[in-house]
Image (tube, rainbow, N blue to C red; front, side):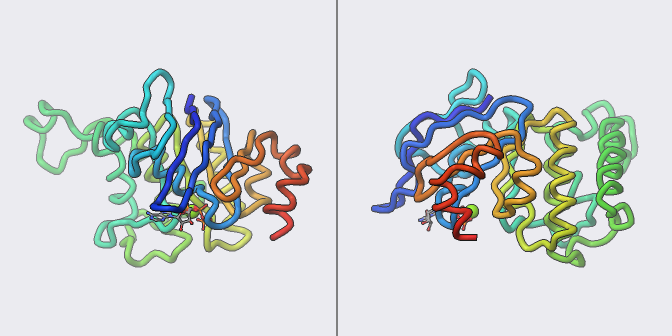
Length: 251
Ligand SMILES: Nc1ncnc2c1ncn2[C@@H]1O[C@H](COP(=O)(O)OP(=O)(O)OP(=O)(O)O)[C@@H](O)[C@H]1O
Ligand SMILES: [Mg+2]
């Protein structure tokens, strides 16, 4: 579904990604692990068109996306969350979540013409109900009307993920979704990732939390100093001596 071919990215003399090739299969939860600075976020920035590649190509289905503008890539159904994601503080949780669907969920022209300005389209209502259901599953139903500014860090991270889910991407890129969270919240992130998969959305997830990542992923790519050093099932990754040395050993 998403294919990296010899992806290179340099920042001046620093090679953040060195000839990285791997493929994310549709319907899977694909993990990326690697020590700090190994190029994980840079890979996400390259996929989503936020950074131009130095060399190599990236394909999404039949489209070559490595030279496409970021908004065009997003419109193909590729969405991401950020390591320290931001919400609009002056909007409620639900309003923040619904921001994510603005490109296709809003009332159409006729709807807008015949209805009151604050009327919502059927699609919006349906998506809001779905968002509510997801919020409920993570114990945040009561928070739908709270201001984003009043949320604690973990809640903000969750809302960021819910916002991306409700926009129904084909593939969702999650950058450290459990960062700064305790064990219980991290477990909930794992459950949420499985729910994303069950919605038919392919997931590419970067996480430092080995336990959560190994529990939920179908396949894992390991980066070290910008190069791919291993890929395989979570079981195989945990047994690979190179990975143990580069990453797990350092935990
Ligand atoms: N915009 C940039 N300009 C210059 N150097 C950058 C830029 N973005 C990343 N780098 C460098 O590229 C390397 C890879 O960074 P990246 O953020 O991709 O790592 P990471 O694997 O996501 O690390 P972490 O686990 O800390 O999030 C680092 O050495 C980083 O300093
Ligand atoms: Mg990063």
